[in-house]
Length: 374
Image (tube, rainbow, N blue to C red; front, top):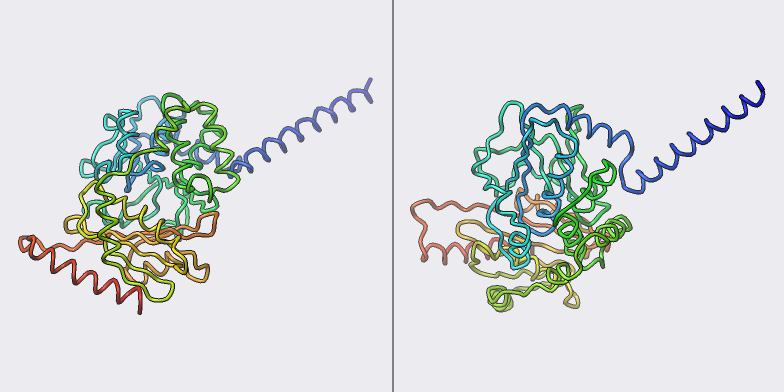
């Protein structure tokens, strides 16, 4: 009996070890360790104030990730804590407006200039790890986020994570949506309504139709598409390009300069909701034979927005952007293409006019060409 009891005990312990190892492997496959998941849960449950979720760029990946992260927090937080979502700017491209309209996201998100961080509130950055992003009101900068979920290397990546902070910055994956979907799985959060659809499209869009996706991106996408409405997903994938996009493309083609493998294109004056067109044009130009660095820029009011793409593995795009423009960041995609961008304010105050804008565009063009081709 005693010997049999020992054998039973050994068998039970062995089964527990096997189960623990299996759980560990599952979490590792998700890119998360059990300890990291527990730390995340602990921080969420300890918050006495509000959760303030901020996205600085409105695109499918950021929208889907932030909207789904709201569900993760709702599943774990104390009942008296509120979750507030904020964005910088307005939905621009047709695909962004389609997501916002389909999910009625304008009822969930507020403009960043309405955000105030209370004593017990925690700030969460999604799809960004830059604390001094010029799209954020100066009164809020530099941001002091408690949580960051991003697949780019912003300045937070160089900061040491504190005991009460959670930085999930992982450029092994191609989208922030993958990170949030993995977190939802690890925390047993059920993703309902349009969340699986928006996350799936965020992954699809940010990984260039999965062409530059990692294993984890594809596995997340597979889990999500089992829940998402396929007709709605196809509608988002086949979004129409606006007339403004083709106007910007034509202007950029007529105002381009190339030296060796580097090309710089000026897309001119853009409407507030057309800034994302720059990244679409940059992706397109990197496909031109002989081009290994494409820089496309345009002016939105008194802001200069720059989108850059590089296939040169010898160039650290994020470092180069920060060196030349004193800000910006970039990520290396699984397909070994670097994607980055910068937004720079040029404040002329009362001196701003259409005539001044034309002169400013000429000066900016000359300076960007100098910086890129020097």
